[in-house]
Length: 364
Image (cartoon, rainbow, N blue to C red):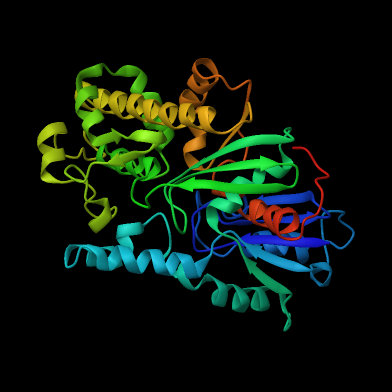
């Protein structure tokens, strides 16, 4: 069975081709277009796989594709977005502005319809195989199926999916079980992105902030602990006294209390000061503490001693190192495609193993 996983109108667009459970090819559109984290339909990736030199072993016939999968459940996303927009009216209506969610194209909500049109257009075909939508965190968690573990606990943390931004799964053999998910706006990924923007950097430059934290001091750590409030059973809340992400997204992510506490946003042209270093330090340290809080709960409540960390926050290597040092997990595995670059492959893996029940045949 050949499954094409594909995504567009969300950052890091690309595709993956899975054949009988084995990934044959995984492509990021940015490698062809040279536009980092592009949201455009992966036309160049599609052409490279299905319209290239027929003598090339990595060129395939689209007629051999049995199923197409996408790593978003657009119905769930529409429901979540509707609740968010109507929850705190009139302020939450600001979420309708495209700039409020600049890291995701608003057209992702009708991805299924647009995908059918664009595939037909770019491939020159009239008939498409069945298209299956996979929940975003399910797609992230499905990397378990190519992990070195027969059993594992899987932690998914990112900016947001179609229902949640933090979730946990148990994996055994060829089955995954979601254990829990936290609130949509209680998102370490979104907080990290918004603080990155506040410090004068662009979204997707979070790695720069992780590095900048090494230059800082614990000036704002206690205040940042007020911003991320730890709860029972591995839970946490983003304090909305400081944030307005739930009403304004990236347009105006922070309240007057945040500005009064941490200072005004830095313009990209302004020099970095010790204040910016110290904010980065506090953000990084409290993010690490929050992830450790979650993982320590997981190790108490779920039996496996193997941990998989995936989702965009899984790229925080400093946090991952602390998990390895400071928890009882014997092995910690972070896939090389932990971010949304791996979501198309994850959607194909979920359908092949979780939905169809096929055995595992490949280890990454």
